[in-house]
Each structure stands twice: as structure tokens, then as C-alpha cells.
Length: 119
Image (cartoon, rainbow, N blue to C red; front, top):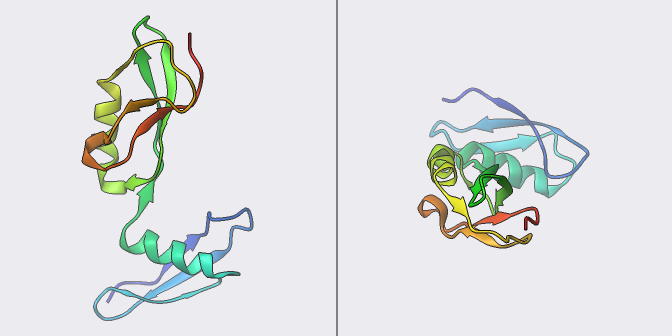
């Protein structure tokens, strides 16, 4: 049986301290400490299939860098693959906020988009 896990909910600024309990099969049995239902969803997702938004920079054709982020969350176990693809990519200038720099990064179905304008 898994040990209880303590998390800080990041869904809103309140930052509830959540205690997650697991059943004999290792599945989430209960979540306590949440002020709303979103805390239960966050804790369950974080303990069963954690996902992250990745932020980074991509080299531009002129040698400068362009700030980028994933448009959605990617599985935590894929972050290194995502970063490898981001680091090997080049953005063709000009770039505007929201322009897709990499579609379907690392086979996740999530795009990497520019978060800044660059001429």
C-alpha cells in the first residue's frame, strides 16, 4: 500500500494543503484538505498522471532566442523529450505571440507556441 502523499494545490491562489490516501491497489482512495472540488481533481491527476506546461526558448534564425511554451500540458515523463525537440528547433522570424513553432511536440499532441513577438 502506498503512503499518504501531501500536496499543495496550485489550481487557485488559495494553495490548499491536500492529503491523498491510496487504497490497497495504489489508486487514490480519498483527498482531504481541499476547499473546492477542483482540489480533488488536481490531487487525483497529480498522483495518477501528472502533467506540466513547459516554458523555454527556441533559437531564432538570426541567432537570438524566442520565448515559447507548450499550448497545453504534457505528460511529466515526456518533458525531457519535449525539451530535446525544443532545443533542436529553430524559429523563422518574424514571430508573433501565439505562432506555432512546433506542432505535436514529441508526439504529445500539444503545440509549442511563441510567447513574445520577435522581428
